[in-house]
Image 1 (tube, helix red, strand yellow):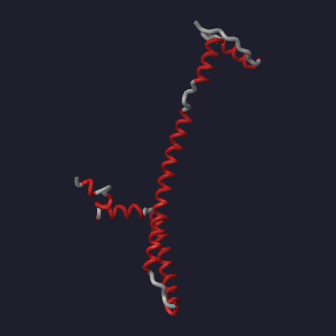
Image 2: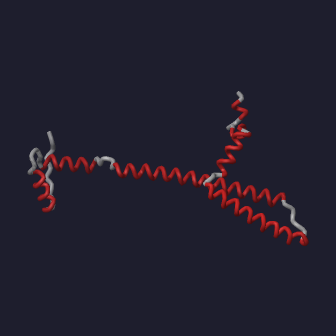
Image 3: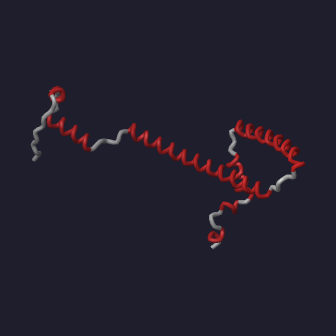
Length: 148
């Protein structure tokens, strides 16, 4: 047995309900029941699901970008620390020549960066591939436990 309930509707809504209920095979109870069911149990919207999938892909892409940026920053920081550790200070009379040489090397460096960017190449991938080809044991998780 279905419970009977009384509901008060605003005039425009009641008019729309009466108009829709005039269709063949429709009645007010079925229309209200279907509307309440849809309200309480909404179907997942396909556009919302597609948007969520796209946001997930974007999130993963940003995670990769963050990881790669972190690798680049860490690599640069390690190089700078190493360079500053092993480079002795220059005597005052050699500094002018060293500055001139440094400017020339920097110009060459900027030109190389420009060429790399124009090639759409990924130096990190190339370096990792070279290491994997020449020293594959560096990528082993734990060579001691793998031998067992």
